[in-house]
Length: 556
Image 1 (cartoon, one colour):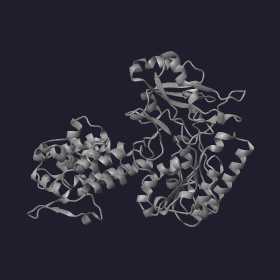
Image 2 (cartoon, rainbow, N blue to C red):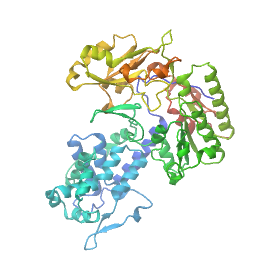
Image 3 (cartoon, helix red, strand yellow):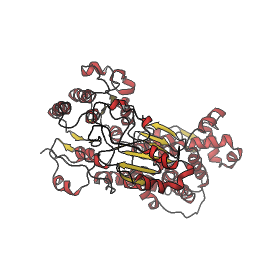
Image 4 (tube, rainbow, N blue to C red):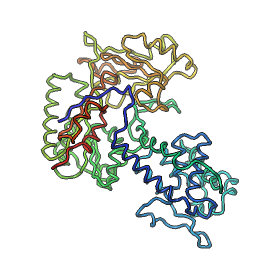
């Protein structure tokens, strides 16, 4: 067994060597497909396919587009020429004279290919939408249709023709419509013979960085910047890339993912497919599973007991029981079993309840090992006592304090710990985000000075610095981020937190720097050199995947 403590995220962590190798191989393969198009015909135009792709990316760069949009411009035609076994099954598009003018649905093939490689949602959607953008533009702008080349007008017929009115209205709801239209227009313009533009190497680093991008989710609860609406994260809509589970499934590995909470199941299930044999369900809704949605049905009968109440440690033990049964029945190759932190919130280490839970947990982990599994164990976060000596919660209501100084509605305080399971922590954690009223943003520094005077506050930073320090998506960050000391929590207003549920026990919660240390364990002996690597490497909880997939000693 290897036990390693988690480390502080104050310093950006290096990318895993295995991830770096995979990314390098992926980009070499992808750019190899582009490079061999150097002299290939581009649908009868005056430029080759490669020249067209490079010109399109250059136009995006000159328009100050972001990295994802530039890459989408470079890769928008990747579905025409990637090496896919079923590519020849795509119907050919032929002009009236019988001339080949492309293959139908190349944008769909390209989107699927890039998604399988692990590119983010924006890159994939822009590539998959550039043909639909053409149909949109021809519907709303007759001059655009008149400007198309003869070849492009011919392919339009096979692509469904201009949008009808209903399709136009639906397209206008797309938050990335402007970027899709831009890629389309660059696609139309990038057909000039003899133009000198940067080569593929100019985009290699950009492609690598996009494949290494963070997932984009930094809490359970957030404020949507565009609308000002407060939202719970209940599904995978905010994900900016693929997942390890999805990538393994796409490569033929049978995946089983079981979660305690269903909101997490809807994120973890991203890219998994019951049609490929994947299984994904939650303890919370074990009695609602279907073969089509979850890859399994009648879970309670299968596991041999009813699903437990959501506010119980047994909700987590049910996850392990399900994993044991699935493993025993050889239903998957890779298992992802994720538990609830209900017991850790409710009961301190050493209490009877905590000890009973850990004994049951230990026994079930033993069963997994006895069945032949390589088991990795880690935690999402630690947990600390957040109460005063008299047992009452040590809370700083941040919005109330700001409004005393800067007036009502001066800012909106968001508590990212908020989720549908709030009874045991009252939506009180050690991390809050502050979105300042647009009329008061010039007073951000004054607010920071005030916040740093409270004894419950350990760190108060502007959003830009917090995003860089703790690897959070900048475009989704607030104006100010506040982190509490170990034995305190932060809230918005007292009226917004149900403290009645906390009566009778000490508040235990998480979210701060003091809850970063987590265990990282593996059931098998590590490969040669892993022991030496322990001290030098900055270990994170997500390293559990690298540990069990790449660092197990091979059998003699």
